[in-house]
Amino acid sequence: MTIPVTEASCKAGIGLRGPHLAAVVASPPAVGFLEAHPENYMGGGPALSALERLRRDRPLSLHGVGLSLGGTDGIDAVHLSRLAALVERLEPVLVSEHLSWSIVEGVYLNDLLPLPYTEEALDVTARHIDQVQARLGRSILVENPSSYLRYRHSTIEEPAFLAELARRTGCGLLCDINNIHVSGRNLGFDALAYLAGLPAAAIGEFHLAGHSVNQVDGQEILIDDHGSAVAEPVWALYRAALTRFGPRPTLVEWDSRLPDLSVLLSEAAKADAVMAANLTEAGNDWAA
Amino acid sequence: MTGLRELQAVVGRAVLGHDEPSLGDVIHGDGMASAARLQIYRHHYESSLAEALKAIYPVVCRLVDERFFAFAAHEYIKASPPRRVCLHEYGADFAEFLASFPPCREHVYLPDVARLEQQINVSLHSPAEEALGTEAFLDVALGDYPRLVFRLLPSLRYLESPWPVDRIWLGQQEGREGAVDLGEGGCRLEIRQRGEEIVFCRLDDRQFILRRALLAGETLESAAAAALATDPMFDLAMALRRLLAEGLVVGFSLASPSSRNPV
Image (cartoon, rainbow over all chains, first blue to last red; front, top):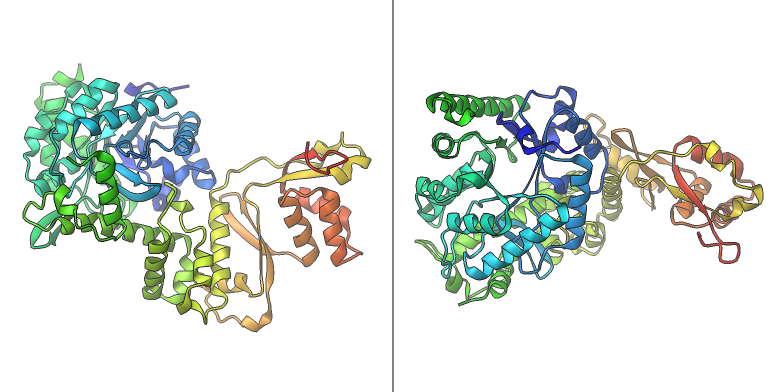
């Protein structure tokens, strides 16, 4: 059985993290969906069994961090096979990855490094997305990165790069609102203009998360550390995204300085309220 | 223009901590040093891997204290960058690193504590499988028993140490803190998943030798011979009943009569 995408309701979901797993299993929260990193469940064991049980009653999204879609090493065939096995076993409603690279010369850098936005990078990334989608037998969502640097020889704006990837490969886009805010502040671009450059029809999911504000080399740098509540400017940008794209499954991520599950759930409830208010303001245009 | 492969090689080496004078040629400073921007990624690379090691080796960390563990992790990460994507698979040879790490020379038991934690971690991420009951062997002729090759629970691991690493590990758990006499001798441990948790227990020499040989894929005849060499009075039938009763056997095959290898 495969749940169609529409079953990933627009009710907000939460990122499922190891320390919350027991509490979620003991008392499954009434969230729209759960999102898990597949890399944490490759192999097997009690955590995978628990995820499988949770999956029976609610939609699941698998949000990968390790495919290195823009890496010139190519897609790791073993990793892709492990992902395919998990997708087959868990039948997630959404599968997503990042517009980034993380493997070079066989070393995994455990980060989502930004790409130079060039025709070459576009070709490489599109080819890898095609490969992944062919192996999984389904389309994936590709997430915009949070960035702390840009390359001198980029020739394409990031939203245009993402739009072209979607056009070439048929992939959807995961619009991470916090990442747009963080990158916009770090690299000096306008977040609303960025939203305007994304193709509405390709947007399949929103992400919300917290970030920290730091001083680096005398400049303010926002770090996408997923370690705090969603900041007010990010909520404002989320409202703008809802107005532009309409409601989409929305996920609240929290990875570091993990709070009690109830805090995460209240953030998800806030996302629901923002989405509902936007629907009302839009005269339910999007509900059709 | 720098090609994508060349750019990723330069940035990758910089993330790993190598000097890359050409960074400024590929990264905009935007009011900062290019290296300072790259340092954000380098910091995440190292701190996230150190966190991953600490999650796998919490008792080693407690035994040596956080600062020393951070130092050891830093040196290990420099020597052994990850080659696999799943972080729970990182640091599989951390015990060997500690064994050859001069500042750990006095902590002679530390590598074996790390080996125990690594085995616990592997066990935790192993698939569960249904165990076979005795009825699964009804069709095996008695004369074929020596050729039996068991497939044991995927989470099963065996560890032998000249140190009481099980008591050291337990002594570092919350509410069970206590001193351990290193002179009390070593242990032979069986580690496995049981339900939602990982458990380990001591085995006597004969059970340990038998089960470890079976896990390694030896025939029942060969594994039994090794156990009987330790104790000719070893009750093999009882040992096999225990193996099945404890739910450790998930499959079996028969080695060919000539090679004694599984067919």
